[in-house]
Each structure stands twice: as C-alpha cells, then as structure tokens.
Image 1: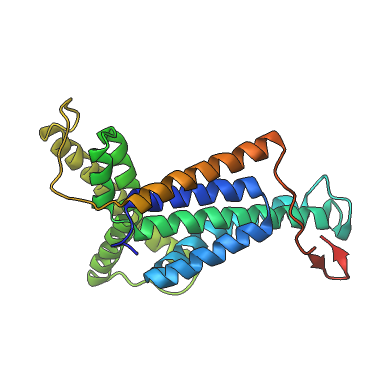
Image 2: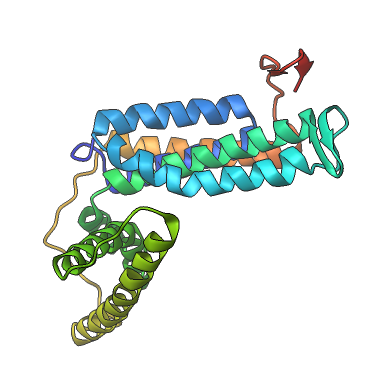
Length: 262
C-alpha cells in the first residue's frame, strides 16, 4: 500500500472520505467507514498501532458525548430512565451514537493516513508542487510528532528505571512517575525545537529560491484521475448537504431495550 500510492492520492482519499461522511450524517455510513479503515489497517500491517491510538483519542470523547447528550439532552422526548435532572432519552443516545460514530470515522481515516504515508515522499511531492515549505514542515512535523514523543518517552522511562525508579501499582504512584517523566520530556522537546530552528535557518529554509529534491515519487495517470474524482465527489456531497438536496437514505431503525425506537 505504501509503495503503490502517491502520498497525495492517500491524502485526497482521506479528505474525501471525511467530507462525504460529514455530508452523509448517518451512523451507518460512519460505521462502514470505520470498518473499512480497520480492514485497510490490517492489510497495511498498522492495526496494532492504529487501535491503541484511536482508543486514546476516542474514549474520553465518547464518554463526554454520553454524559452531555445521553444523560442531559434537552430536546429528548422519549425517556428511558430518569434520576432527578438526569434523563436518559432515545434522542440523546441516538445523537451521541451518530456523533461518536462520525468522529470515529474521522479519527480512523486520518490515523490510517498518518501511519501509512511516507513522510519524506509527502514532503518531496509538496516541494515539487511549489507548496510553501513552512506548510510542508508543519505537516511533516505533525505526522511524526506522536511517534517521536512516544519513542522519547520510552527512552526516558528506561533511563529512569535504570537509575532505580520503581513504579508500583495504584494511580497515585503512577501519576507521580508520569510527572517525573514529563519534565525531561518537555525540556528535551523544547531543546530539539531550538536545534531544528537553527538547522533550518542555516540551510536557508525561508529563502525565496525554488527547491529541488533527490527523491522521485512516482505518480500515474490513474492516481491523478482518482484524486480529481474523489475531490469532485467530496465537493458535490458537501454542496448537496448545504443546499438541502442530500437524498435521505432509509436505514434500519435502532431498537433500544424495551422495543423503543431510537
């Protein structure tokens, strides 16, 4: 997958999928996108990295959706359970499900892109198309930030453990250990940012001259056609949703316990 696709093709596919999922505004479409992304992640061999990363991002978001909309949804009319001001309604649970599934689709799609794209190829392609180098640097740094922080945090933890740091069970000791790891992590990241700024400045990063690259990224007519079609479909989907002309699709109704429709 990484060797066949031009980075712009993968980026166009991810952006178009996110836009069409937003325009569809359907939990069934969102779940289909999530399952498709999971299947592609397994095929690309990155499922072991994508699953925990998506869980870390989505778990607190899903919990907040459940609390805000599942328990406190003012537009809810069909009450399933009630405890004082807390009202569990089918409308609130349905809204939380829709938003949670849609967000999961975004997260899975873009994590899949970030875990499968070759960042040097992406930077080379953007440089060849005269994209401002600042934008390319920010995008490349964003894609490599999480793996870099994870690797640096692992090295810091190993170094502290070799010096006698013992983390015992329980939340408080783990929080204390995390505090000890965060200080050197933040300081090292600040130092690295300064070093990178000096290196980029010494190499004329902000210079006006066009840049060349030794890296050749293959691109085919079929991929260019796919990118154009994908972006056109995304633009059409957004236009249909904004104009109110999006066709309403009939999906099977969700049934909550007790036979109450969602």
